[in-house]
Each structure stands twice: as C-alpha cells, then as structure tokens.
Image 1 (cartoon, rainbow, N blue to C red):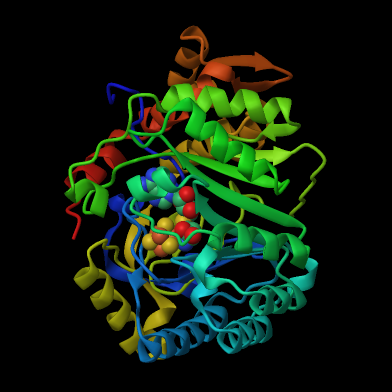
Image 2 (image 1 turned 120 degrees about the vertical axis):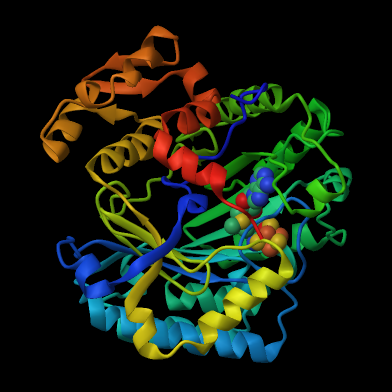
Length: 430
Ligand SMILES: C[S@@+](CC[C@H](N)C(=O)[O-])C[C@H]1O[C@@H](n2cnc3c(N)ncnc32)[C@H](O)[C@@H]1O
Ligand code: SF4
C-alpha cells in the first residue's frame, strides 16, 4: 500500500495495463453473441487536445492537424459500421464522447459524427443520456448550441482549478477569463447536466486556495462535480519535472466533502458529487451491460472480454497507435486483438469493485441473483472491510462508510486479484 493510501483509481477493472495482445484474435460476433444487447453503452474516444496538460496520461495527441483528424474520423466511421454489423446491437441506453477533448472537433465534424453514428446504431440521442467532454479553450456558443440540438444533455468541463497558481502548478495554462467564459456559455446553453472536473492536492494548494476553487465552482450551480485527487503518473510532464502531490490530499478531500454536503450535494462516490435535486436515470447498468468503445484508445467490455487498441502516453507511441488504427481495413475492426479475458472469479471481482466503491453499496441478494453464490463466500476479504471500520452492513447491503469512501483508492486496488496485479506490474509503458 502507498504510504498515503493513494494506490490507484479503480475506474475500470481490470486496469488497462493488464491488457495484452490476444492470440488468437477474438471475432466480435463471437465475443458478443451471448451478451444482452438491449441496453448498451456507446463510448467514442476522440484522442485530440490543444495541449498536453502536465498531469495527464490519457490517450491523446496534441495539435493533430486537419488531416490526422479527418483520417481518424473516417476510421471511426469504418470501425462503427464493422462493429455494428458484427455484434447486432438491440439498443443503446447511454452514450459518452470522451478523450482527449471531443470539443476539439469543429461543428461540421461534430454534426457528421453524431449523424452517422445515429444512423448506424439503434439510438435516438434525444431519448438517452449523452455526455460530451469539453475543455474551456475549445468550446464556443455555436458548438454548444449544436450539441444541445443534436441531443447531448451533459457537458463535462475540465476546469481543474479556478486559481491561476494551481493551473501553473498543474502545467495547464489557461488564459484569464477563458474559464469564466466557458462556464457562462455552458450555463446559457441550458444542458440538463453541467459537470465540472477539479483536481486537488498540488503541493502549493492550501485549504484557502482549494476553498476558492470550490466557491467559484458553486457559483455556476453545477449539477455534478468530479473532484480528483492529483496523481503524478509516469511519463507525464509533472513526473518528468520531479513534481510530487502534496501530502494533504486527504485533508482537502474532507474539506470539500463537508462543504459540498452542506451546500446540498449528495456524495455518489469518492470523486462524484451530484446536486441533491438532480435525477439522471439510465437503463444502462455498468455491472451488467456491455460497453462498445469506438475510436483509438476506447475500451469495450463484454462480461468475459475487455478489449481496446494498444495504449501509450508518449507522443510517438500515441501517434503510431492512432495511425495504425486509421490504416486498418474495415474487416480488421471486427476482431479484438488486444485485451484481457475475465474468468468467472474476475467477473465477480469486477462486479463488486464497480458497485462497492459507490456510496449506494453492494446488495447481497443482487450478487446472489447474478452469480448464484454468496458474495462473502466468494470474496471473504470483504468481511475485513467491516472489521477494519471501512464498511457497514445495512438493508442487505455492504456499504463503505465515510472512512471507507475516503480510502477508496486503497480499497479498490486491494481488491484486485493477484493475477491482474501481476499483469499490471509487468506492463511497460511507452
Ligand atoms: C477525460 S479527462 C478530460 C477532460 C478534458 N479533456 C479537459 O481536460 O478539459 C477527465 C478528468 O480526469 C482528471 N485527471 C486526469 N489526469 C489526472 C491526474 N493525473 N490526477 C488527477 N486527475 C486527473 C481531470 O480532472 C480531467 O478533467
Ligand atoms: S487533461 Fe484533458 S485537455 Fe489536458 S491533455 Fe488530458 S485530455 Fe487533453
């Protein structure tokens, strides 16, 4: 365990660094034939940004130039058609455009992308939750109006901090006024959900500076706030310049939690807070339903296979993966060639990790219905969480308590199987 308890963000399990080339490749019609395909999640990854922020290790390339963007969008369309033809989807229940920075696209590109996807997949964007990630420097009022008219109902804005000193420390330069302009435009466009991403814990950020960011965020009354503890990840600019996160991340977490609960937000997970009056429903269930990822860098999940393109952080590696993706013939998108298989015990672990790390907790009877066995017989380590004071049992559910939620980034990785941990540790990042 890391000394300060920040071992890792269990956003997905198994982690992508446990993926490897699949030999033999798995045809998608076979990978998906036993899946329930009525409530799928469609995720589209746009790996482009204006600049590489100092903390960011996401799969993205900066200043790609018009021809690389054109080629990638054309490849995404070919992939989309090949995948849809292979897996015969019955319904898309939720969608997200992430990256990178999807708002990097021009209006014409956005309209074409959502238009062609809407004709290929069984979806009406206006009928389902559709999220779109944006950075302050790339959105305009016209883009926002277009996205709203196409059916996007959630804009997620990467703010990171409202304080100039933090943005300098995070190596995320942002011209003065750009943030306010972006927030103002999003509010004026009237999306159902405006989410603000903030990062806390750079070494120079004290409680006062953090409070200033939180106050400024709440001025926009966002429906959601994602608060990310800073991680210094390998090969990032902050890592190369020897920066370390501050030792006070947990203090800043408690400060924000207390403030947001008092301001009328509900805690959904360690990172996500939602305004109490906001209800966002979806038929997609992240533990049960599959995810279709389109674009280089996107991951796809069935119950027993998780797959994607290869992953890199360095510019050369990322470019090569995007170019390889763009050069593929249509037929090659219909097979998975890089990923990880989940045997029944990994499927159970994934179910628990995806559920337990959210405030609502994991229901014993739902687990029993899903797997036909008892959760604590299968995963006796869960009993330790209650004994250690991180979880409680109530209403037939095991739930992380206040302490447990605060220690999510230790509890998640602690639950990973030895096999997945070994694969992650052996991974060499390029
Ligand atoms: C998919 S990213 C992209 C959003 C958008 N491209 C932008 O930055 O404006 C989602 C969020 O993850 C968070 N994040 C990324 N890397 C991080 C790191 N190393 N430590 C903490 N949070 C991080 C940031 O808050 C970021 O906005
Ligand atoms: S944080 Fe967002 S804008 Fe910055 S490099 Fe990462 S994906 Fe791009």
